[in-house]
Length: 140
Image (cartoon, rainbow, N blue to C red; front, side, top):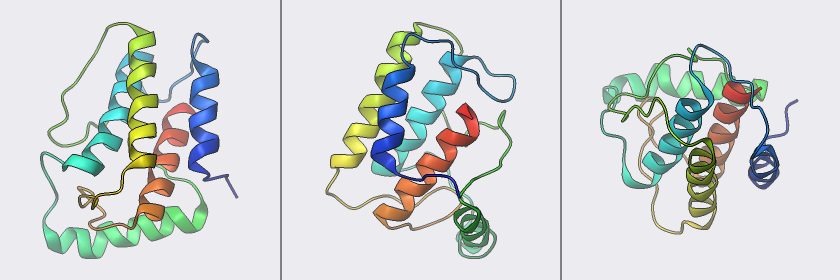
């Protein structure tokens, strides 16, 4: 089973800074890192668009449970989060900073978390696992 430890993943991301980062799909490193950061940020402030509640409570919950049981996620690596602000290019170091800041902020976040756009309400531990699986799916 894949390691879903949030702090270990944060350490891995920090260690990647300044290296060539292979990403899945067609997106470049900058776009991928901003996408991952936004996903984490949205879990604290709310997703701009969500799937209908019925979807979240059925298909979304089932998908999350399958991913969690497998210890890994597989999703369209070129699919943006609904309502995501796409950042195509820019400074890779700033994109790494955004992701590590989002991860640190999330780790330390004490307030209620917002429902995931597809999975619905998740506990903090479930969200941590979802974020790690999302990062692992994009960054291998």
